[in-house]
Length: 108
Image (tube, rainbow, N blue to C red; front, side, top):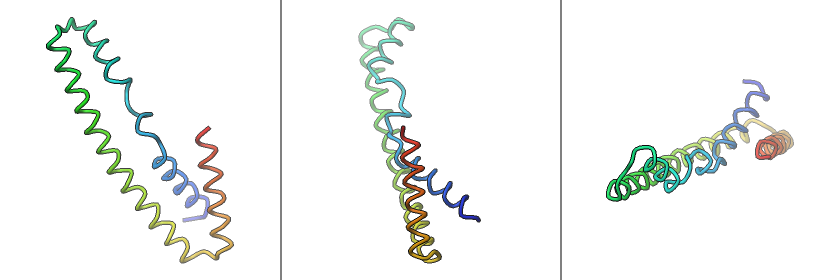
């Protein structure tokens, strides 16, 4: 694996780990419930139940994303440690700098 592939892989992991959960979530549940109520003609009881279901789903999805985020961070740390064992301190410093630059440019 060449150094560009390693940099791209680590930058990709860093970007995934830093992506806010809300960015992948649909509109807030209140907006979704309003739209569903209008489009499906929900009564007040259904509306309340749907809102509860969507809020429960959101909590479960966030839990899954948090778990995966932790796994990705562990992989990233393991990869970083492995690279430190192979690269010189100067090379590692350059790699870290490139990763920070790519990570910052991806957040704009």
